Length: 606
Ligand code: SF4
Image (cartoon, rainbow, N blue to C red; front, side, top):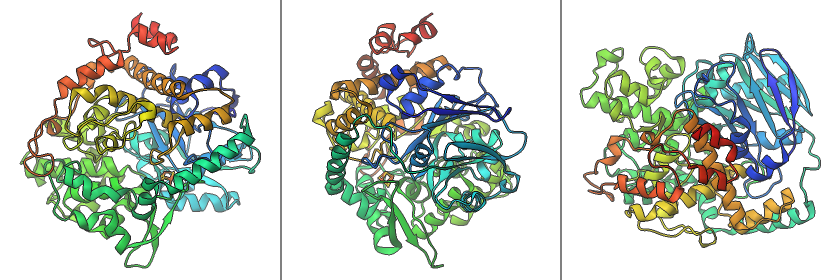
């Protein structure tokens, strides 16, 4: 990989940093390499919103090569809501552009005296005044900066007002709605007075060890991916393609995870979106799937359409079945720069508390919360981004909201990150995915619901278990997490149904390695355990590996009716499969050493 540029916003100093070769080999790139690079900085004492907190934008070894879904990058640091490891993946074109500009990472620390933005133009960095951009939304900011730097081809990653106001689930956005939404790294960026990072580079030769071999594998794998059935469905119907099926299984949350089905699911399905408001598709750099939706509403404006998580967040979760309204609510969050999963989940909790009598309109500035009331949802989004009235409480996320009103146990979150819209009562493997994810309740560290629906992979030993099996699938979940950690190290999109052998061929050609599938999987396991070690050092224990109360209770109707997740048995079996110490929740000394993570033994075991 190319060097990383370190930037201290407090002093204006910069330094080129060469990634140690053995770290590149052991961790490949992306989130795993970022975890190794940030390991020493992520201490329990570190305040995620302080100048000392690092913010690392980083590529993978395949970024910008037009390999299958490799036009992505990842942003890492410490989560302000979770106090744990934070990583947030994002598509678009920014990551490849950074690579063309001569770097594979930007490692930002410090705090500027007043708002600034960074302009990296063909390897030359400027820290520019950004006072006039403070308060602008994520779309306006991108347009204004492109005009200012005079490069139409520049790519801009930016925060909106939510990041400026340090909303704890603010994200970082680029390329018209591409989103590093989760874990609140937009707040970290805002706390640094950093509005945006613009990059531009010359499209030249990329650092590939065997470029001729790589070109052949790239073409063949892209052809196969384009013809793949899952890719075709994603292209035609978007990520909400399976919404109806999820609802049928009881895995699509409704009414803040309290209702087992949603009668109007056909109104919000991927098929309905395609038949009604869809006017085009969009893709990240080099992607042959193009899952992005472009829609046209009554005003005639073509705009980003919502993906599955946003549809459920502002749809069935709040008992809304109006796709146009959901689109507008999603756009509002994008413009403010907020994660739609956490926003919808937090609003859902507020509605739930209101309905159950735990809060009244007097507690929340006279607002009444009635399920399905779109105007109220919109108002709460504005208040949250501006941190006004009840928005000041909502801006801290659902765990804080619950705690504030004495009902923390009602918040559907794990370790401070809101659960995504794949209910583990419908697909039980997600119970372990959420409980053990290194960044809080996350569906991207392991989208195991696909395995519970039948997507197996013999090459890496991922087998099928019934969607309501328990402990017997624990080792399979761990294996799946390891494989997805490979994806997150390559910064490859999880929507790409690429075979492990193809990944190995791409990695070997790009990095000059001679690996097989097992070495690739071992690299995944190493990354997973490294993130665990970081979290253990920051205070995470076995007590943190749990599910919220709501998800441990049965639903009264639908495809998951009556099912109770055997969570204790599952987590015990998971620990055994992982080789983690059941008392402390830490990887054992032997496990760390077997994964060449011996450096961490002293920190974890003295
Ligand atoms: S599948 Fe969708 S999100 Fe993934 S790289 Fe392609 S366009 Fe981007």
